Amino acid sequence: MPSAPRWARSAAHRPQRVAMAPRVNPPSSGGAPPAGRQSLLRRLPGVDEVARRLESEGAAEIPRALLLESVRAALDLRRRQILESPDHALDQIDCSHDAIVRDARERLAGLHAFSLDRVINATGVVLHTNLGRALLAADALDHLHRIAAAYSNLELDLVTKERGSRYVHVEGRLRRLTGAEAALVVNNNAAAVLLALETLARGREVIVSRGELIEIGGEFRIPEILARSGARLKEVGTTNRTHLRDYAEAIGPDTALLMKVHSSNYRVLGFTASVSTRELTALGKERGIPVIEDLGSGSFLDLTPHGLPHEPTVQATVAAGVDLVTFSGDKLLGGPQAGIVVGRQDLVTRLAKNPLNRALRIDKLTLAALEATLRLYDDPEHARQAIPTLRMLTEPSSLVARRARRCYRRIPAKVAQSLSARVSEDTGQVGGGALPLAELPTTVLALGNADFSAHALDERLRHERPPVIGRVKDDRLLLDFRTVQDTDLEDLARAIARLVEPDHDA
Ligand SMILES: *Cc1c(COP(=O)(O)O)cnc(C)c1O
Image 1: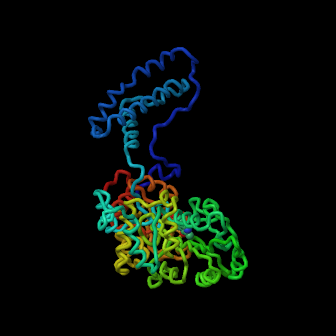
Image 2: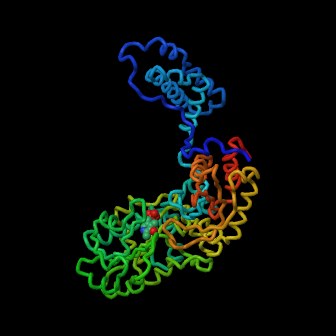
Image 3: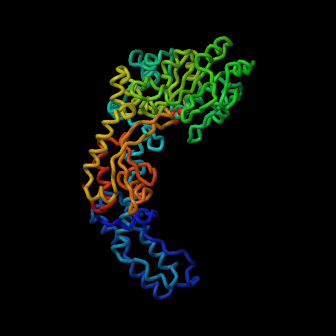
C-alpha cells in the first residue's frame, strides 16, 4: 500500500505559493544595499528574459500586459526578499531563473483564469445556494443561447409594431400553470417580496405571525425587508402558536396586508398551531384586506409520489384564495434565478407600474431561460425528467447507487485501498430552503483513514480542477452521488486517484 503523501499528514495543505521571507526593516537604513545583496540583485534575470521563456512555452496566446504583470510581480518579490531578509536568511531565497519563471507562470495562470467556474457538487444537497442552486435544463440552455446571440422581440409587439412588455413572454404560461389572473417576474424572490410590500403597504401595517418571521440566510430577513419597503410590521401570536383570532384582533384602519411566509428552512415542532392559508384568505376577504404569501421555493409538481414530503404547490396556494403569491425561479421550479409573483390582476398591475419594478427587472437571458423552463411544464412528467433539479430529487436510489459504483470502478484498486474507499448508503438533503425535513436516501463514496484525514481529503479535493465539494461526517469524507452528474464521473474519479497518486491522469 503506498504510504500517504506528505500533504495528507498535514491538514494545513495550501495551494503552492512562493514562500515570503519574514518582513523586517532593511538592515542598513538608507544608502545602497551592502555588497552581498547587490550581487544577488544583479543576478536576477531581466523582465524580457523571463517573458521570453514564458512565451516560448506557449504563453504567447495570453495578453502581453498580463504576462508582464506576472513577471514583474515575481521579480519584485525576489527584490523585496533580497532587500528585507535578515543576513542569515539570504541564502534561503530561491533566485534561480527556473524558480522565477515558475512563479511567474503560476501568477499568470491565476490572473488569466476564470474566477467563476464549474465545480462538482458531491454534497448531496440538490439546491445548494453556494453552488449556484438549480442547474438549467438543456432546453433552457438552448433558448438562452439563441436569444443571447441574436436580436429578439424582447419588448416589441410584432403585431402592432409598438413597444411591448417583456413580461408577456412568460405571463400566459404562468397564468395557465398556476390558475392565477396575472403574473410578473423580477430579479429574485427577495425582490418580489420587496416590490409587493413597497407597492401595497408602504407607510402602513403588515400583519405577520411571530412563527413566520424568518431569516433564510444571505441577509434576507422578513422584518428587515418589511422595514426597507417602508411598511410597518405588526407581529401576532407566539413563536410556536398563532391563531386566527390573533390576526383578526390585530386588524386596524392602517392594516394594508395579511402576510404568510413559508418556513422554508426550518420547522417548529411539538405544541404548535398556525393558521392555514385558506382560513387566512377567508378572514382577508371578510375584512377586505389582501393576503400575500411568500412561498419561497414554489413548486408546480406534487412530489409526494416520489417519496418527498408534502409541500403546497403554487396552484394549490392560488386556489386557496391568496391574492398574491411570490416564489423563486431557481429553487424547486428548477429554472434560473428569478422572482415570480402571481395573483390578482389589479394588484399585479400596481406592482408592474411601480418605478421600483424598473430597478428590479428581470434581464433577457434570465427571461429566456425561465420561459424555456416553464414550457417544459406543459407536460409535467416530461418536466420531472428534463429539469435537473426535479430529476435529481426524484431519481430512484438504485440509480444513484449505480452511479456511485461506476465511479468506484474507475478508481485504481490500490488508490481505493489506500483511501479505504467504501460505497455505502446515507441520507442527503434538498437544500435551498426547500423541504427542510426531507431525507433523501442516497449512496456515498466514503474516504479516509488514519493516513488520510477527512478534512485533509476535503481540502485537497476542493483545490482540484474542477474542485470537488463533499461533506465530512464521522471523520470520513462522503461524496454523495445524488448530486454528481454523469458527466462529472471521469473528472471525479481522476481527482480521487490524484489524492494518492498526484501524477495520476486517467
Ligand atoms: C428562498 C426564499 C426567499 C428568497 O428567494 P430568492 O429567490 O433567493 O431571493 C424568500 N422567502 C422565502 C420563504 C424563501 O425560502
